[in-house]
Length: 66
Image (cartoon, rainbow, N blue to C red; front, side, top):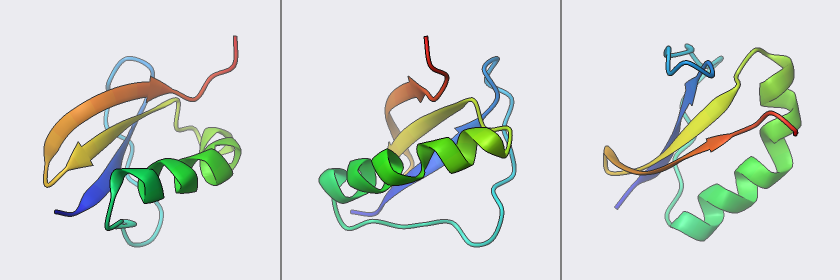
């Protein structure tokens, strides 16, 4: 299984990620990474992220505070 994040605007529009896509061996690794990186992603215009497990949507999470 490969865990990845898809980056989107708040309306679900796909945002091209800068650089190569990060891949994680498990859900906890992916969630720990997003916990450290979310502010930088938000500053780059990414408003929500979608956690994927081998391409299957697990959940969507807003990066916007409030």
